[in-house]
Amino acid sequence: MDSGQWHVEKRSTLRNESFLKEYGPVSETGSLSIIVLGASGDLAKKKTFPALFNLFHQGFLNPEEVHIFGYARSKISDHELRDKIRGYLVDEKNASEKAEALSKFLQLIKYVSGPYDSDDGFKRLDKAISEHEISKKTSEGSSRRLFYLALPPSVYPPVCKMIKAWCTNKSDLGGWTRIVVEKPFGKDLESAEQLSSQIGALFDEPQIYRIDHYLGKELVQNMLVLRFANRFFLPLWNRDNIANVQIVFREDFGTEGRGGYFDEYGIIRDIIQNHLLQVLCLVAMEKPISLKPEHIRDEKVKVLQSVRPIKDEEVVLGQYEGYRDDPTVPNDSNTPTFATTILRIDNERWEGVPFILKAGKAMSSKKADIRIQFKDVPGDIFKCQKQGRNEFVIRLQPSEAMYMKLTVKQPGLEMQTVQSELDLSYKQRYQGVSIPEAYERLILDTIKGDQQHFVRRDELKAAWEIFTPLLHRIGNGEVKSIPYKPGSRGPTEADQLLEKAGYLQTHGYIWIPPTL
Image (cartoon, rainbow, N blue to C red):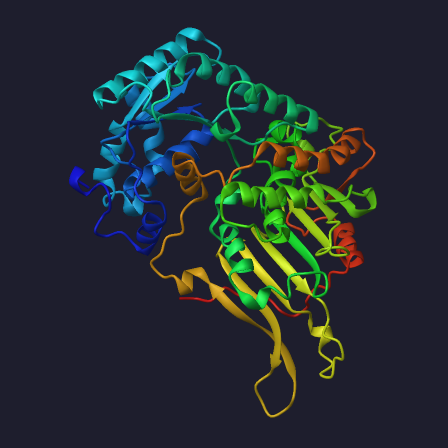
């Protein structure tokens, strides 16, 4: 890809064209410096740098404007950092196709080594950034600086303090400084508020981008369109028609050597309080008055503020057998690797409808989906209720799809009914279209200054207010984790809780992704 073709490749797929149409290439007055702090860590190697490369390869980052800086404590050279990340940027099957773009991308990367609380280190970083800006003939104050903190939250405050002191624009001539921070945003309400206050004292809210990669997933981003651009959903999306809503996340592997880290947080902090709760907001929120980020986030906050306190009898915790065999996990650990909890939203639309959030490790399958189950048809003249209720399922991963489970006549001479589906499977419908990785979209949103898919401070506070009391009870041993076998559905008590909440499981029907 030569410099004259950076804006769009001739071989770009529908994905590139539609993505480019929506966002446009990143081109504004002033140079763009993207600084990845924690550049030698796993998150940067596996997520941040690959997302940046994909954006570059598709034409969203102009090589005439963009430069990428890595900063970490490791004492390595530019060349060593490039070698560290090279293998994460391309697959073997497309290595030759992307070889030229890869070479040009790696040349954009410069590495600066230093501590996270050192004036000298960040002075050197600022000098490197400034040299790039001068080389691009960028006037002081018009440059754009994006700091991606691929770091543990414990070092956010000192790092933000150093950035504020040494690395921000010194005057305002149309440029900006933005900070991207990764979850977990604290461990409970108090620690989250403390972290927010420390960062908020240094940067304004429009400068802070709290990233939750679930909000960048294609099917999650589709939720508002599904709900508010399709007439037939509007009269159905309420307590009169919906019996319950399930939002499920399953992994078929355990902590994989991360037991000590995971034990500090558990499945509720790791998955439910952020990823699944964000999805719940999009399922349950009212229509915003516009698509402006603040209007959307206002409606999400209203949902969170309407959630009732969680009852212990509507929670089931589990811990898979063998979890404590990890030497970094305490022998008496009560940390849940599985949780099912029921949230109830106290408003006119959702009163009486249980929202079931379920997440677990070492489960029987790997998937994430949203399952909206409708109420029984009154006057069942076909005697088919035993076959199962209508359900609208949005499969987030893997094999992205949306399908509606419904009852139809089974082909043949007799009047017999069977469950089938109306199915939109993305791989079949959108052949040749590569679905963007969540981090690609969210980093591009950050550059564009669009905070729609990021967590606002009051939203974060409301989310922690829901779960902090329960988390403290778990920490005090008042709510116990039940052992379950790896490779299972989790504790049987979780299925009993779902049944008690009114969920009716369909027996004999399995959705099979269509083949191409």
